[in-house]
Image: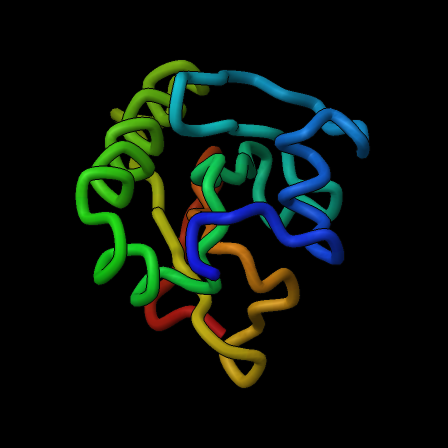
Length: 119
C-alpha cells in the first residue's frame, strides 16, 4: 500500500535506520543522504519517509509530501553551496529511465557543469 514501509525496499530500510547512509538532513517527512555512486561533486538523494514507488505516485498520493521533497532539494542545494553555480533536481521514473530503487527520490546534483540534454 502506498505510504506504508516496504520490507524489501532499500530506502525504507534507510528511513528505519536498518541500513546505514550518510545523512545530511532530516525533517519530519524527509531524509537526505549522499549517493553511494555520485555523478557530480555534490550528489544527494532526498526521499520521503513514506514509501511511494516513484515521483508520479508521490505527487498523486501525497502532494504536500512531494512539495516537502522539492523544498528539501532546494535546501540541500543551499547547504552544498551550489545555488549560484547551478544545480539539477532529477526524478528517474521507471527502469528504462534509470530508476533502480522503486521508492520516490530526488537526485540533487551540482558542483560541476551539467550539460543538457543529460544522458
